Length: 536
Image (cartoon, rainbow, N blue to C red; front, side, top):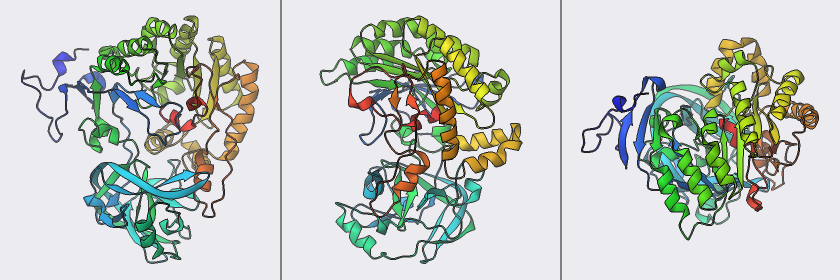
């Protein structure tokens, strides 16, 4: 591809910002190419590429490296600008006036119970969109976007069917009981507690959700993924702040602008040589795939792998890109010095279904060949059979054939995971399902009625059938359990218990497959959540 000829700015004195976009620190040039229609690549020179995972994260690692930033899914949760957001000092600030760095009130779940905590605003943006008015029995009214989510006693709920119907979400209906922030403990937040106590006993029953026209609405990213406004707990977009680190806005730019860290290998090599670096496991592929097609042009991963291996740093790579085969010599060399794990995503064998549901990704046979090449190179490799699509790829025959091929390719282990319809992916998937398999719409609406996770009965049946098949093909050994924390619907149910009781974790038998994580004997890899696989 002739990328040099496609660059948008190169006047010899530093590039000008694109119309409507702020200048990027370290920007070298911006590139568009017909092979990536609608996407602009912004080539930057980054100051740092070694990223610490937030301390409260359940991920099975503490550090990540993402040579690319950006996502094509447009996930939003929006509130009108006049909505009063609760500050950590007990005061309020209009949603429109929030600023990055502000300290407000969010929630965390510990021991099956939710409590109020301080949370920080990481990103703030606006858009214009249709809104609805949510009215409660106590007179509370909030105006929000149709895909906004509020915390009910039964878990997170979209405010309107228009924002969730058929997308795997659940929506509010009159009579639903929302969680009032005044009912949650607030240790260490005396000012907040005093304010909320004024609402104790308020009736948070939903009365109506009414169309309210179109308005400018605002969204934020907070460190907890939520915030409190009008006495209710609101969900927010959790990932968009990653674009603000490089001076791109967290709204539309996140969907259309991909940032490429040209100097990632050199910067990483410097960072891991530091005397302060403790050589903890570094994971790649948990945010964006490091072997997306653009890596064929930029070739960032070889230097990154050499920097980690040469410094004594354990590493893992999660990908569905067969371009990884190009770097097998470097990964093998790193594996002689440090623990290495490789995970490959492979959901199905049917080539026609693959072309329909995963256009632009390597074929199933190409990915099986990648597994074989990794194993033949003497490296451990685990396969994520994800996502399993109800009614399409979940039959015993289909799973047996796929696991048989995976075992024959030399995988050390496999995990089988049902489709998760998270915000951002559910919109695309519902549109695809309506076009390609409309007869399944009602079934999916029922299976994902309660949230992003498929119903527990389906998970239980899939786990029972898969256990037999994994044993048959010798793919059931070891692995890191994903059931060490509450997940899915059960997490949402237990997190809203107001009596302090500890909710029961669901039966979640899927292990992280052998080979996908480095064999590092630290507590940090004991438990791994299925949520990490949402991008597979």
